[in-house]
Image (cartoon, rainbow, N blue to C red; front, side):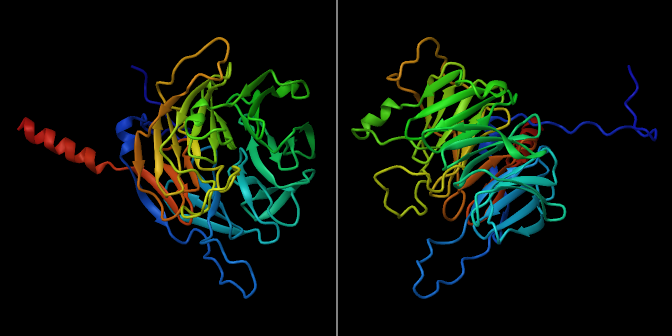
Length: 401
């Protein structure tokens, strides 16, 4: 038997942390372990003659560092707020009153982020959380940035804007190193290898897959997102408005977040529509009592749906404040020519968790820990409730006696 590993000072090394496999039982036991009610400043009183406020201010985006130790929020009060996932404590608040803040994304260093601006201009900013300074400005977009993603493998990142362009960047240079012109506002995503990226184009219902090394060539796959079940609701069917894209960890599937009452899962290799995720209320409106518009729009959607790290589950927020979890371990297998008239499997939630007062706008699963972070007018950390397990163990011991 080999000796236990030791550290440089001769002491026995600590055992690696235990891993918890995600299961249906664990996902249904998630409970709010901590709620931060002051995670966003309250709405200031309306001034005479000004437009009335649409309700309380919201957190608009959240991002984890690579290790899952920290989570950063961006909010309509133009602040970043940094929290520790392990201690559940608020670490610091940083302000961006001049430029506003949206879509923060940790780089591969836990002290720096890139983020979009909401005021002044449409520059992307590289920001140090350590000393609250800007390290670089990335200028080029002439419209608001609506999608921003960091490469999983290097210092590259990608942005999509309402100016109908996608720009590819590197943290080490202020000028963009690639530009794609598109017919409509795009959203973007990298696959887990960083070698492929996807661009979703609204109004055309297309998802374009590019080879990162040959982005200046035509996409190697063009996927059409059409849901034939929508004709059962209305005819002509209401268009789908895509607000986020994300690849599964094995790069086999693409999760398409939408502003309406359904999200979709596509096969990433051929483009088959596999599943329609139902059971939530879309975030196209800001309040649940607001009327639905004729034409679909982004609304508050974009940050509310994501995979778990093992891609066995999808978690989502909802306009009614619920947290929805779908089990996606048994997706159908389709191959051959894509049939746009084939109905997707309609998945109902594995469980629905009672969430926030007001919409749950942002929902993300920690990349390393068994926890969900959700946000709207408040911020919540969700952990598995182990008390039920303890009760089961106690009953089992009593039975054995």
